[in-house]
Image (cartoon, rainbow, N blue to C red):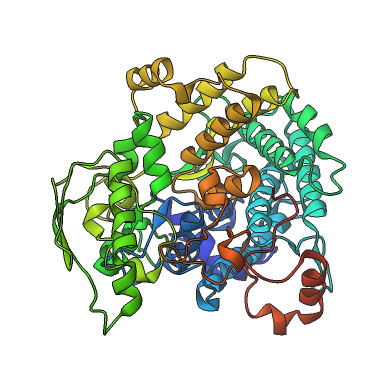
Length: 566
């Protein structure tokens, strides 16, 4: 992705332009800058399409990688060369959690400017562009509220309100769906936002200015949120919204909302996984989680090589601690190493195991085994959980900038999601049709995003049990949830929400209990994390409304369930 020069200048100038076009005169002497004759909202809209999904390095590392990707069970720390225990993120650290709050809260000024620019009476008034802005706002708030729960919503941007109240998730969801309905109604049959400078065109990095795709995006988001809200305490809108969404067009084949990763712009501005992998040092490297690798490997999923690289392998020595130096480590060495061996066997790995009492010698062929690392290992397990044992993220995931490689795009919403949600609705009796056909279309669309060829996809769909909805109602719902979770690889926010909403994969949702092996962090009884804590500054910057939110929602802890969580 290369953003146009004028786009970048527009983004940098956003704060000073306000809503008055006359201020363009001050910068018009530079021919590279935007002048009144070519000013357009499209140069500013790009920022709202990029920044929430491709954050700067700080948020990409501390919010995405340390928290949501790991809560999703996709990535793991805590191995032998990791700087961090796999309890990091499960044990609260305000410096890390604040990165997520600051990232989302930091988008508000851009959002307000775009709303003011494009609304009636704005400098770039255009009801169709305004509708796209409101759709993006809706998705932004869905991510924001599903991360923290109650957040400021209805009071934001109100004249004179400096300390906004926190709204309930129910009210936020209803407000978002109302905005989506209004945007879809305004778009109607229109296909573009206008001609010439009014046309979003290539500055729309997601759909190239195609309004009908934006309309289907909005309806798919509406369906997802309504399905998530269905059955939550006090829900009085979800079923109606589901019925409406299913009766209207949803994202179809080849319509995934994606943004190509930028492998050239500075990592400090637009980051990628590769920035952490290659620039932080070996201690920042991570492995891929056990559940994900197991589902891919055990079901002959052709995404396996797209998602992960096999274990490094090699020769390893696991030393038993001396009893007089580490009594617990000495006593638990047999149990802990037996656990490691069971992970190898579960994966059908090739290895040798020579237990000599005070040490165990292990050999593994190089680049052969696909072994996922168990999630949330205790810090006491790190010397036994050798980095070379476990699968690593593929080069498509960790592609290095300015190295000529390829990278998977950032996911906004997958077209696969619309098919999976329709399959779920059919299985639950809320819609008619062929659930298996919808389910398989979802799998096909998800695989295509990762470059899997149609022959491999068709072979998987025709031979693997995982590709068939042939079980009980609950078994079929589990398969749909698992495929949504697999498809959300590298989109930790969504994958984490799927676990909290559906309870699958159940081995993640159940949390951990054996503290000889696993680390509970700060979460009571090793439970599954349900939300991130609010930014630490809120207690002093907006104390009354913060306290009201805590009183309504529950303690500001990771274990406090959100309104819709199962």
